[in-house]
Image (cartoon, rainbow, N blue to C red; front, side, top):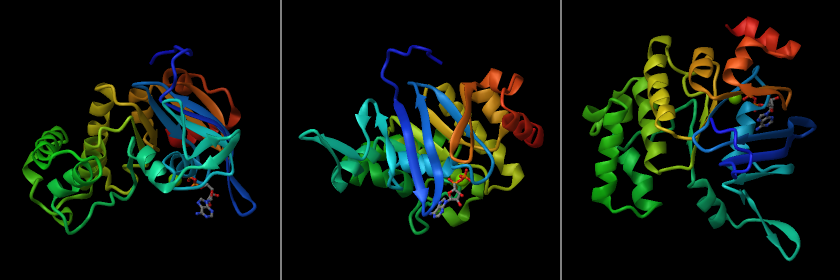
Length: 259
Ligand code: ADP
Ligand code: MG
């Protein structure tokens, strides 16, 4: 959206490195996400997409580089001219400003849909229960599940469960939503309803990072597309150009295979 380079980005990743043993899953990744921007991350299996969002959400430690949320260093602090890891409580505080939606919905099976959505706002964010419930019901209505508030996850289809997971992530009023292949475990006929909800969020101005294989979503909804291969960003372009005029041989080959 905004091409303003002067504003502080919502998310900025600089020279990010992450290895598993000898293998560099992320080999110096740079990317930024502006306010209200929707960025799709594409690339072959094993290119580091999940590792990237897991590092941002601080589910993985990092080996080099830095990440910033609204200009604030993630996971570390400067102290007497040194950089040191943040305490767990500060990491949790930073993580609360991000919402994550996984391929597996990770709902709590023994709780109702409503409780799945209200639990974090009440216990983590200190929202009064009545207010949390009101907002959860509004969000469930928005994802088309107003009538499922009292159901349990096992009574729902995969698409419905993923829509609950999205409502849960939004309920915490995150600064940015991170999605890791949110439709990849769904039967094909259920993919559309989840993409529809994501498109609605994107249109409403939510800042989103979406790892996906859904090319139509990337082309039609994302502002920018980032193509990764072997732990590196190969192309990072406005969605229109990305699909219409890929530059690298690798992206051309990827698009030929995937579309
Ligand atoms: P993508 O999401 O693009 O498919 P990943 O980020 O999951 O890729 O993986 C990138 C690379 O890192 C792969 O080679 C993968 O095998 C490796 N990897 C990811 N997570 C781990 C882990 N926990 N332990 C060891 N290797 C891992
Ligand atoms: Mg992955």
